[in-house]
Length: 412
Image (cartoon, rainbow, N blue to C red; front, side, top):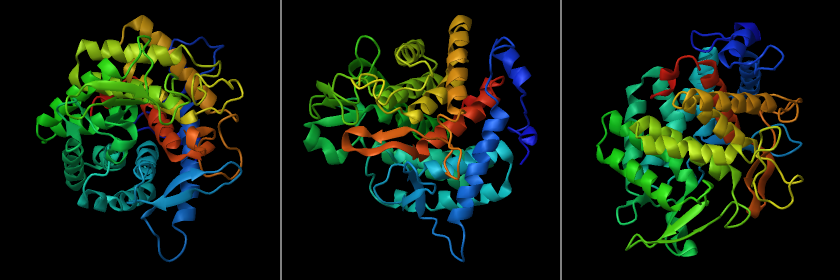
């Protein structure tokens, strides 16, 4: 595909237009969103060719990661205890949004449908939002398929069963209550509030909105330090709701700032403000965003934990950068002009770095990005390509291309 013909909906933005939009001088580079999405499309179609070769295709096996030096996606069962299964169908839907490629849309449907049986069993943990909203949510947004809407509503009702009214949050990991010594809520859970808000606005029970707001308020009260950085895990007494402690599971230490956890906070509170329009949530979204941005290295891509003492030799986490970049495309529409200009510069810098050879594979690797970190303390997926990095990267690029019309980000 010629990148000059790549369409984002009905909108094609040139670098010149973007430079004016972002207030950049002609001497400053501006991300070439057309070229970057064209690159992603090439990686998607190569991966699909691998996955759909042969007489039969197993749509229940979903791309998860690519190890350093490898080129093909490692696959995992879609309906096992796997929190990432929704990202690959989401990547396909985002690629279809960018290109209009009907074959990609057909495969997006096939991979989305493969997740249906997840809702036929009791909810395993909070990740149901990631699983169903990235897949069925994008599918409904782009096709209006009523079946997809029903699946999102079912997912929201299942998520709500994890809510503990005594605490005011959803239980993230039922399997880890004993390990943490109480009701555990992880920062990642902020992303799943979008499913609850959406469901409440699209035919679901209004109690879903109440749960989401209570969760956001309780998390805001206990999950953060005075400087706006977050713990990965907050532990509460399940009977009284008393806050017991903040700690980490995937970060360097209990008192450190795990980069992707902070990224989830940026994205999550941006969504909460969009869904409520309550000033306290916008103020807090800015606070956690500034805490993240203030600690970035020069190339705008964070180390996996901002407090790893081995910096600058510590691994980076491109996935965290992608999550924040996607959030910033929306947040700039809610803040004052001065703050928006600052966030635009940061956003542009993030996407520029991600488009360089430092983070982009130059060989036959099927992913769009290198250098993400999954679970560093467990020695898992360190310096890998990981599917959720590609998902949030493509979401950020699609949103960036539509930046003049922020209503596109307001809801599904």
